[in-house]
Image 1 (tube, helix red, strand yellow):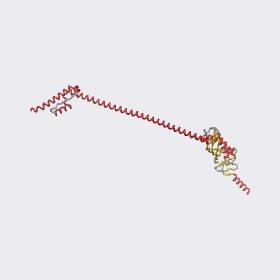
Image 2 (spheres, one colour):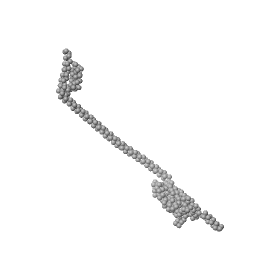
Image 3 (cartoon, helix red, strand yellow):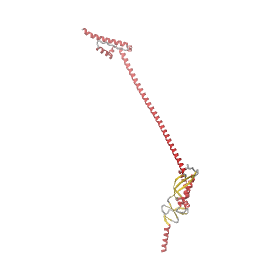
Image 4 (cartoon, helix red, strand yellow):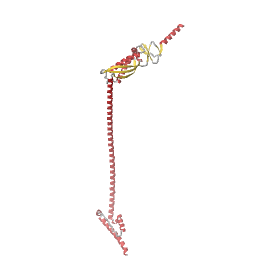
Amino acid sequence: MEFLLGVVVLIGVALAIEYRFRNPDSLIIREGKEGFAERKSRLYPRHLSLVLPRTTHTFQVRVEAIAKGNLDVRAVLAASVAAAPDALDALVRMGGWRKDAVERAAKELEGQLQSQVKEYTEQFTVEALSSQKLLEYLQQQLPASKERLGIEVVSLVLLSYGPGETRIVEALQQQEHARILERTETLQQQARIAAARTKLKADEEIALLEHALDLKKYEMKKNQIEQESALADLRVDDDIRRHRKQLLLDKEEFEMLKSSPELLMLTPQAARLAEASQGLRNARTIVSLSPQDVAQGSDLLGMFQRLLQNALGSRASGEKAPKTK
């Protein structure tokens, strides 16, 4: 009984020493028939498993390269890597069955980045180097690094990239400064040209609108003048019709007086002459007629004069008769 109890105790101690609980931030690797794989169980045997942290490993890479023309170029890269669960065979092969397998694989990645930066830099001159293009080139090479090294690059940043000599850096800065000033001047001149074109276009549109307005005013003035002319013609026509009617009326009156001379006494002129003769006893009645009137109606005037003389004679004889009595 005591022996069995001791065996159980020994087995419990062995299990307590051998098995551990997996931490959430740990990657447990086991070896299987098909290669290395991740252990998903909560408990794991520590001597049969490799515990790797899931946290990222960050490092910097300083590269001394040479561009075309044998000019020194310096680059500084910063990268963060972590173990790739789907490439554990490559990770163990590159970093070994060690807890620092990720760091060892990162060292290999650092050497690959250096060679890739040098390979890219040798293709261009110093003036043609571009940080953005270099970073794009390096990112295109990262998937192959995952398959070979068993790590995945979480982030890759190019901290600096340029010539190593200070004089070349200053010369490039001066060229860039001159280029920016030239581009700024060009943009300013283009802006002035665009403004002048805009102003010219606006002036042309304004001139066209003013011309259209003048034409419209001219058409309105023309219509107004035509209306006034038509109205004046209507007035003249109306005056002509009225004068014609008056002439017809005068002609009818003349024909009537010509046919009946005694009606001359009923005219307003004869009535005024009669009243004037009654007011002035010894006055002579003077009838002034123009030559044209005489030429037009000599017979009528003679008749009118005889009637006036008879009327005045009868009035004068009537006034003398009482005095003889």
